[in-house]
Length: 297
Image 1 (cartoon, helix red, strand yellow):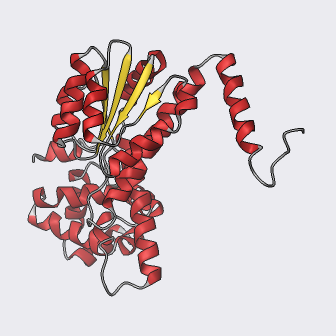
Image 2 (tube, one colour):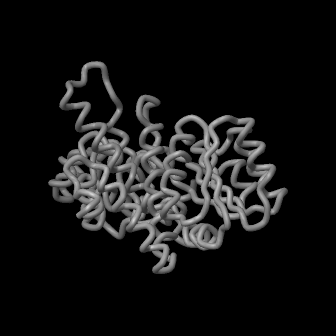
């Protein structure tokens, strides 16, 4: 990777993740600074330029070159972005779980990593793609949600928010039912496919069948993947890599947030009559709670 590629990374990204990703491409002396930053970011945050150079066993100009190489204008901007990253939570580099971790360590690592990863996903969301998806969903005559495993849970969550979408919504769990449903979709229908990997064969087949019948396909995936070759709108929901213990949970949370964005935006576009029906439905649910208002009230 060239230095201009490293420097071109967006300023909204977590600077610690940028340092981690750029590490193999830095010069040897700059790599010493990077390693020191990743080893003890809080110490570097509170260090003057001369102290950071001493801690890294390099010269002050090398520290400056390191900052420029990762996309900062200088040491002060680097420290500002470092402070922001630390405020968001523990970087993925420091969130690896260990059998020696205390309960407090696990709480700190998992909450910190989750918040950092969600912020990463937020800063990388393509709002134009979201807008295109919202437009398709707002005009849909019916919506079908598809997903397997953890992504299937997201699809079910989206389906149970059907009052906000304002049209018939479905979410089949069985792969045969999914394929059958997709093959029956027609122009005016919208298929929303959730797949964190984007490599699941069954979901790619569902996308192909839905498009073949004339339906529009929205794919929500964690990476650029084969699934995106068979959709009309691609929504990338990137989360940071980490241990297999809880990465699926984080990707699921991020996808659920995207579902909230989509259904809220579509709901806001509906007319006043739909809004009143939705409020009546919410009141009906409130009446089912023990401590809620009675039906007569």
